[in-house]
Image (cartoon, rainbow, N blue to C red; front, side, top):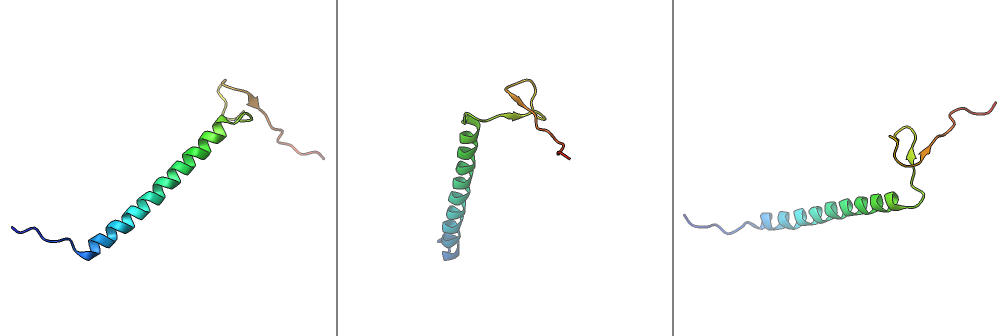
Amino acid sequence: MAIKAEHEMHTRRRGLNLGVGLMLGGFVVLVMALTFVKITSSDFRIPASQATGVGEQVTTSGGGSD
């Protein structure tokens, strides 16, 4: 069997897929970087509702003043 040359449509799709893949990868890196910065900041506190004895527990008052 003879090897067929790649159609022009596949070449264009490969370029689009590469662009979408790079944008998705960039978004993942951005979210990871923002998460890392937030977690390593000095004023990060675990909310009391999620704390399991690790870190500083922060409580908030739920009622308003009358």
